[in-house]
Image (cartoon, rainbow, N blue to C red; front, side):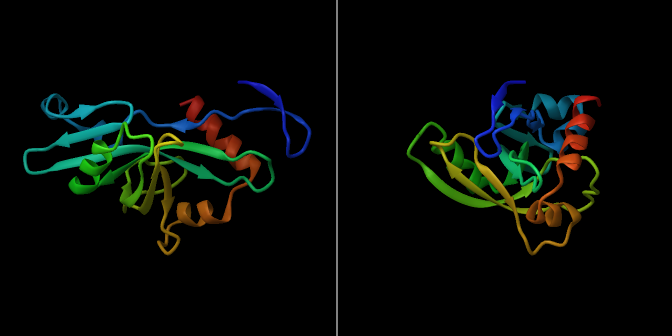
Length: 166
């Protein structure tokens, strides 16, 4: 961790690590044959099942921490339509590209039940790096409510500890 003086409160702080996922959740359940027919990089994933193909990109989801100066970042995956995925790949190296699309959250975060996917908006600004992911506020799910309300520093540290120690 890097220590620094926070411009917000003037205290010495250490950055929290991002809670990052190396693959979309569905990738973890693939058979050896399905893995051989799929592609996975640090930013893109294509899963080829016998009856369909699924497209995923990695993005950043920033969780507000309301009693601290820093926010909690997640490196999450979202599934996209084939058309949205092709557009993203087409402009991947274009630093001037900005765009947006619809996606479904494809990473399961600690302490939440994800029996149903969460709809998201994906905002792409290649000057900033990975796309930013925003869950739809109207979707009724505890994570979505926490995302839009913010979480406590204690809760953020609990999530970081869970990921680092499991």
